[in-house]
Image (cartoon, rainbow over all chains, first blue to last red; front, side, top):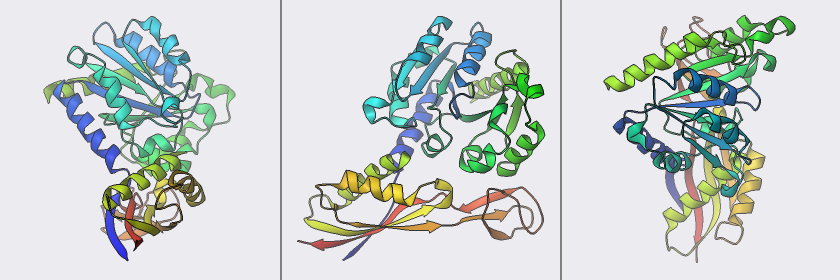
Length: 222
Length: 114
């Protein structure tokens, strides 16, 4: 006997993500979900962004990692709340699920926050599948990774609003064409906002920070 | 390995549907969009693992892959996208909206009631 079901497999995650969105809206907090492959500079970008914005805004960071608290320890010097989610106790997952983000968010005083950075697990496949409920997805590609990442991981670039091209200070020693990377990314998603940055030298950070501040204003007006 | 989470969610969803019904699940029909980057072999492997000891441990996981289809917002024509270039093959516009390719759903299950 055949039984028609027609149910989305990740419906549970999608439902929690939706309620996370409502939770963030209620408290007027802007949530940015940063995703990239390992080693593209997520932690460093968050470090520099928090450093630049923390005097004007109340910020917290939620960090996902399969194991280890290395990133959380590194960020603890920033003087803002850091919540570490280790995915290992949940089965060593390679992405953050909406329910874990919710748990982490609820442990923060949301009414006292303007901005939350989520550092997702380093991976360009799975985090794209699991909506966290963040307001905006930000994908990071570092220049040494080459030009073709958008073509290899289209869903990730499709669901993101911003592409940060990091490590542009290395451009002169690399055989990577930034313009081709931009073109590939825009082919996958013409609505992507692209910022070329170096978290090391601070180059290009102004435009990225201005974008965050504009989003913070939009969130406040809602 | 998002296949493991997906496998667990498939099992959970079917358990919810069957509730206390005594039945052996013989087949699970899935629709998976190509954009989902699900590896069928990995999903079948993970499902065997999570279904062990349950009423669906011998179920066949039938995965129907759904092509990525887009519609051009400029010329209004639709087409299949074979490579990750979201560009209209007719007019070259990049204002392409997706019609399919992100599915991840259980269409139906086949059971033998015991």
